[in-house]
Amino acid sequence: MNKDLTLELPNFEGPLDLLLHLIQSQEINIYDIPIAQITSQYLDYLKQMQQLNLQIAGEYFVMSSTLLRIKSQYLLPQNDFVENVVEEDPRDELVQQLVQYSVFKKISEYFKQRNDSLPVTVSKEASVSKDKKLQKLPLGQISSDELAHTFAFVMRKLKIKHPDSAMVEVKERSITEMCSYLKNKVSVGKEVSFFSCINELSNISDVIGLFLAVLELSKNKDIIVTQSITFGDLNIKGINKNGH
Image (tube, rainbow, N blue to C red; front, side, top):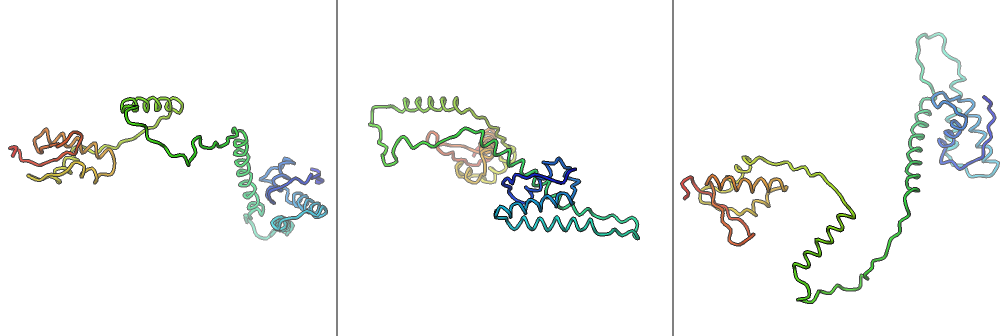
């Protein structure tokens, strides 16, 4: 392969970017880098940058010293007196760095293309000024039923525009377990509030299990359930089997 290489001095993001460019532009196998050739081309690139009075980051010179060190290791004489000695390839560490950099560069290019393909969005100022205070509707001009129907209509339209679905997994506690929990709360003659029991539970499945336990114990005449007002709290009282 011809060692002469014409470089157009593009903007590289670092020494690994430059090395990857040299390798890919010549279709070199990244796992079998001709280190002498690549080192020579890399140094030629740095010389051209210096001739153009371009600022060169220190990391480029660190990479040049690394390439020269690897090249010198190949020039050292081999030990022919020791048999079956497996020596590590001095290029291995550099190859691993180049492979990792190549992967991250492709990922970066993918996200850049994806971002460029997205439509441009701009923010819009609020239609109603923040300084403007909301005024209450005059009494008698709209009923609670009309307000409820309007709200339901708006929610239906919103669901059509932004349909979404979700899967909810409810881990139910056994009714037997919740019955035992409730029996510990109400012994014979004692009362407990259903809402107070709810405050001790951690999730909705436990609340459902507790309510089913109330129905089960009430059916078995282990408890008496009373309610003072509609949709109010439930007062639960333990009784004996004779109903006293």
